[in-house]
Amino acid sequence: MVGKMERFKHKKSLGQNFLNDKNILNKIVVGSCIEPNSLIIEIGPGSGALTEKLIETNNDVLAFEIDTRLDIYLDKLEEKCANFKVIYIDFLKANINEYLSKYKYSKLYVIANIPYYITSPIINKVIDELRPDCFTIMIQKEVGSRLMAKPNTRDYNSLSLYCQFYYDILKICDVSKSCFTPKPDVDSVVLKFNRNDNKFKVTDENDFFRFVKSAFKQKRKNLRNNLKQYDLSKIETFLNSIDKNLSYRAEQLSLNEFVSLYNFLNNEN
Ligand code: SAM
Image (cartoon, rainbow, N blue to C red; front, top):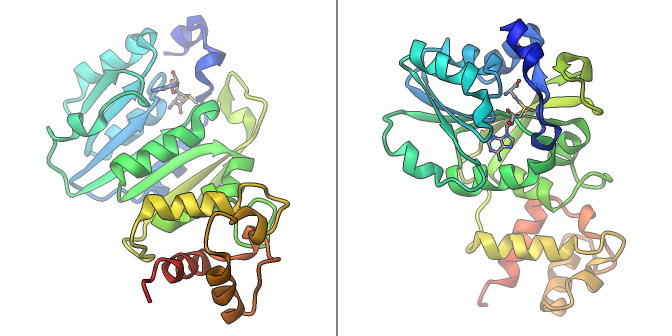
């Protein structure tokens, strides 16, 4: 394997920094707390280092890899392990649910060391289309801070709210750049998303996220400026009831307050 890896030409354009640290691989698998009878989807298995550990859990593992040159590792794994299947396709363009219908499972896990240049589209697709019970991702450290960010911090934004609306997010571990081959420019973090099953309720989720995005549209501007297209007097009534006003910025409202404000705005009475 090592000899072959030396010959494999990693494509920077596909974010091909492969994990080479056994300790981190174990932390990802153990930290994901995978239950029996689960289906695990892996996005971008690369040369299969994490894949092998996932296969060892004896659950079905279904991997989506864009680079067919990696068949030299992944096809062998598929021949050897009845619980592993690899599909060579762009995860972002694939209809993943079509592949899932062939499996029987009680819980769905998505686990991925994600190429950094497509972090947001992958997170959006996983949450929108698959909504797994658990989602473990390795991402750039700074992006991780944004996803976990709390109100009144610089990192808090509409993507933080989107992820936290559906998932409780925990950090599994930090990962130094030296744990990868080739070594990337940035450090990483592994996060675990646990689905929170309807902790927050709004009448129309897509419309709610449009509202949140508008509130954050221009970070330096206050709610009065960013939410001009909505009923400002109703917004002000709500904000006053929680001792805030239209001069506040979006980053000063918690997810709970955003949900209550949106529901208040859409309440007929
Ligand atoms: N999982 C391996 C590991 O941890 O060592 C490889 C991770 S590497 C950061 C990202 C992997 O995602 C590469 O194998 C790359 O070819 C693959 N990839 C990149 N874009 C993809 C896409 N749109 N769909 C599926 N796989 C993709």
